[in-house]
Length: 318
Image (cartoon, rainbow, N blue to C red):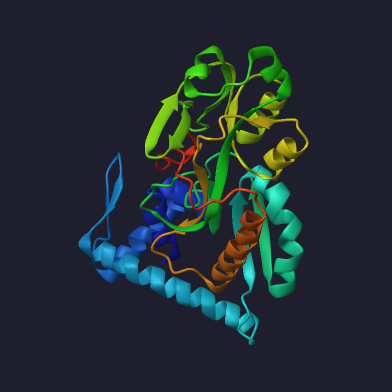
C-alpha cells in the first residue's frame, strides 16, 4: 500500500524506489503483486507517464486514509499519552532556518519531546514528494495541485540601496528616475528567468526591468551585493534587511511605492491527512512566524503580492 501511494505521488517507479530505498524492479514486483491480489488494474503505465484507473483512484484515496491512521496508531503505541511523536523531515530556506527556526527549536522540543526533526535548509525548490519530506517551507506564490498549503504569513518587500551607491548615482524620487539606475537582479533558481522590480500605489501597478551588473538566484546573495554598492535591490524585509536598514548599510528608496509582499507557505502532500506530529509542527510554526511578523516595523495587511519573488510559480517537473 505504501509503495503504491508513493508511485502515484511521485509519478515514477524509479523515484518511488529512491524514496523508499528499494530497487525499481522490486517496486514493479510489489505493484504487480498488489494488482494480482486485488484482481483489478490500478495503474496505466506508458513510456511518458503513469495514471490511475478508476479503481486505482478509489484505492489510492482509501489507502492514504488508512496509512494516515496507521501512523497515528503507531505513534500512540509508542506514547500512550497520545502526544505527537516520531521523525519529521522538514526543509526550509537557508536564511530562515538560521535566523528564525533553529534558534526557536528548543521551545518546540519542550512542547513535543517525542518528535525528532531532520531539518534541511536550502534555497533550491525542494519537491517534498520526490524527496520524501513530510513538509517544506517555501517563499513565493505556490501553484501545485499535488500539495496542500498553509500560509505562515507575508514579509513586506522593500526597495533599497547602499549609501555609497546612492552617493554615486543619486537617489530616485520617482519611477521616472529609475532609468539612470542599475539593479541587483534576481533570477529564478529553477529556470534562470529574470524578474522585474514591482511597484504598487493607489491602484497603480508598474514593473521595471533595470540594467544589472549582477543577477543572483538567492535573496541573501542579492542583499549582500546591494550592501556592496552594486545597485538598487528589492528584498523581503527579513531580520538581515531590517538590521541593514537600522544601521544605515542600506537605505530605503521610493518608500511611497509598495514593492509588495512575499508569502511564506508550509507545503505537504495532498490529499494525505496530516499526522499529529505534522499538525503540531505546523501550528507551532504559524505561531512562531506570527511573533516574527509582529516585530516588523511595517503593516503587512496593506501589501500586495510581489510577482517577481514568486519563486515557486510553477510546480516542479515530474
